[in-house]
Amino acid sequence: MKKRVKLTVPSDIEYLPIVLNSVKEMAGIMGFEQEDIYNLEMGTEEAVSNVIKYAFEKDEDASFEIILEPQTLGLSIIIKEKGIPFDPSLVHEYSIDTLKKDLDQKGLGTFLMKQILDEVSFQNLGKEGKQTILFKHLNNKQIHELLSKKELVEAEHEKNEEALPKGSVRYTVRRMKPEEAVEVSKGAYSSYGYTYVHEDVYYPDRVRELNKTGKLISFIAITDNNEIIAHNAIECEDDDLPPEKGVAFTKPKYRGQGCLSKLSIAILEEAKKRRFTGIYARAITTHSFSQKNVIKFGFKECAIFISSGIERVYKGIDQKKPQRESVVIMFLYINPPALHKVYPPTRHRKMIESIYRHLGVNPEITSPGEIAELPAEATTTRVKTDHNSLTAHISVLNYGKNAVAEVHKNLKSLCLQRLETIYLYLRLDDEYTAMLTSEFEKLGFFFSGIMPGNKGNDELVLQYLNNYVINYDQLQIASEKGKELLEYIRKLDPDQLSVGID
Image 1 (cartoon, helix red, strand yellow):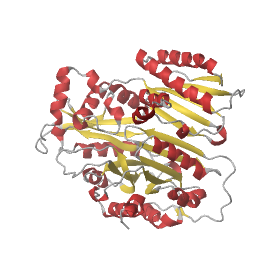
Image 2: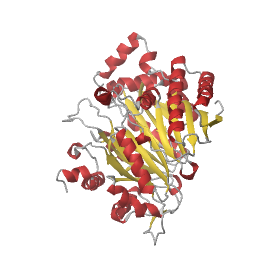
Image 3: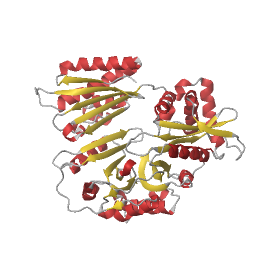
Image 4: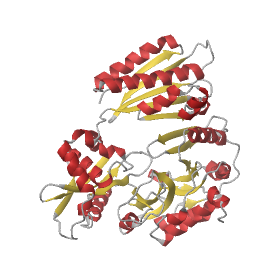
């Protein structure tokens, strides 16, 4: 892994070429292709120009930091400053419709920046200032770019093959070898086309590198003829949360052979060996098969993320009118933490207690005492966006006096980016969560569930639908507990109340 580079740059546009040259040289050292290097330079130029233009007063003698951080999958460029409060939503969002009306191209640079880079996010660090994070993948060739024409025809054919008789295929389950990453990506394409939410699976180099670093722990089902017919993995993306069982697919021809069940057994054995606190699974609601598959291994419902992914059509399933995918968040404790304390908001205490009982743990559930005023320092938040699924995630890391205003500002910015669903994560071990949840709900957020964390740092999750109305009647839920949770959420959804559901 290449080492990070940190630059301290005066807030003066004359120094921009130094920054861009540093980005160019780092990208070249890492092996980026010329087109991607150019895009990195363009994106950095726009982001740095915005900081100089908006973060400091004109002619102010100030400086900021540029951190070039090589990562497993690409290059992260962090622009960190302690200037005046900056709201990204105040930068005019370019749109083709606006351009047609008034030929106003303000915001075009920001729009292009989001098109040519893989991630653009803004974070408020409280007293440490703010930062803009740009990210570009290094290995950016999808599976269709690596296959021959003949192999592409075969992959397309596999999408529509009829399933073989149950029990007619012999196979074994084991860890993936590095050289098998291409076949894993090909299998994902044969199973889902390009609709699968975890897009890294379509890039063999990323699959290989993620396994090398332990961010992904891939298991495969492979026939006696060395054909990879199914895949499932442990995703270890967030240090604060237990890992997730995901990236699951079985080629259409081999569905019904019990592959995912055997892969699940292997994954749970690996999770126990590594002494994880627990493990998550996300099960879709267009059908209940994936929910039933993990329920039989002891996974329990803890949240439902409404409208969390793009519309998908499933072969052989009557979906009526397709809509954005909702998922049930399932969790299995493997090594539960010692007794920990949580402060649920009064309105949701009964449901949260019920979820914990369902998960098989018994934290100390406490009502907050007399809470003093919020701390004087600014609130610290982290915002992550996923423009492929049109979702965003706001995490409140520490509460300050401007907590509600900060969340509202982030929400406004994300809505202007036309993201469909925004999730808000609140620490349950913080008394201020109990105090402020109702204020966040006044902004339009509503209950989603809880997310157990490592070492008892659990989170309450609220969700916000940006002018998207979900048809709850189409959601397929496998268990009675899941149905109870869905009905609770449905009654709190402001959009359901507006159409007469109470």
